[in-house]
Amino acid sequence: MDKIFKRLFLTQLSKTEINLLQSYRCATMTSKEVWRPKVLVTNKETPEKGINILRQKCDVIFPENVPATRDEIMKLVPGVDGIMWVGHYALNGEVLDAGAPTLKAISTMSAGMDYVDVAEFKRRNFPLGYTPTVLNEAVADEAVGLMIAAGRRFHEGLLKIENGKWQGGPQWMLGRDIKGSTVGFIGFGGIGQAIARRLKGFDVGQFIYSGRNPKPEAADLGAKFVPQSALLKESDFVFIAVPLTNATRHLINATTLRQMKPTAVLVNVARGEIIDQDALVAALKAGTIFAAGLDVMTPEPLPADSELLKLPNAVIVPHLGSATIRTRDDMSVVAAHNVLAGIEGSPMLSPYP
Image 1 (spheres, one colour):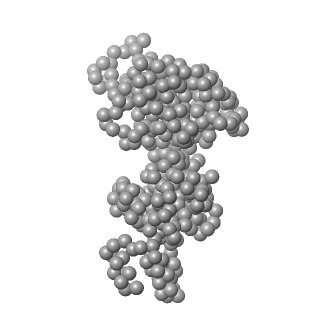
Image 2 (image 1 turned 120 degrees about the horizontal axis):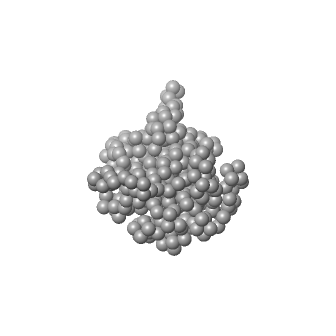
Image 3 (image 1 turned 180 degrees about the horizontal axis):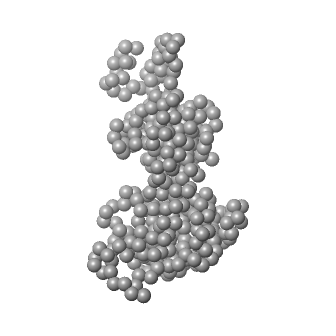
């Protein structure tokens, strides 16, 4: 046993040695000691509200660097009981293998799960949590902001000022009206519905949406279910609010962009890969559509020399949809409760379906 303790500070233990060490720890505890699970939080800048919940019952460890590399995270996985996975690094069977046999639960701190091998988690029947719904309102706020900024040419107007080209006049820098417009939603889940609720006060002409199936909640919002082709053809503003899956990757492409009005504004607050970005750049340059407001893009971080950043009719935000203090606090709290419940063998507060 002394040799194992010595090796602990010199190199990574084998899984057999980790199990032996844990057994030894439990066997040698005094009556006053209580075993505490160990939880890895993959980013040390995670909000304290969630971390403090974990610390009440667990020993919490973090990678040293911010942001940590995936390799750094993987070195800390063996021997932990739970993980709060903060960031969009690949979360897959490799992580589960590295954590076996001590690892009992993982929760992401996100709503999108495109970076998670969900099928592998289901195959192993491994507890997996995530944090949907708590970010809907913040993302919806930003989506409306992008809609207005792109439709009213805020970025282009700023460029005019910076370049000394402020001209003025009755026909200068005219944008798109929201009042009386048709607003389309590709995906009408929690975020899409939150956007629609906010736009009720803008006297929108009609809401339409597309997706796999009609939504019962749509009736209260006066939204009509239509085929995607009809939505693209009729909408003055199009919001993308669907998860990234194999079916939605490049859902918006050269063909679908040509189906839109040349006066239409496209807003994406979902995932960058839902849009064929090269096709979007070409469409914005050619005037195939009027403008785009993007919170997400490909890749992230977006290179400083990206063509998107050279376009006056593209409003670009660096994936800030859920970036409010309260929303990130709430996300960390939900993720923390998910991890604790999974370690205890109880139902998670927000399990991935």
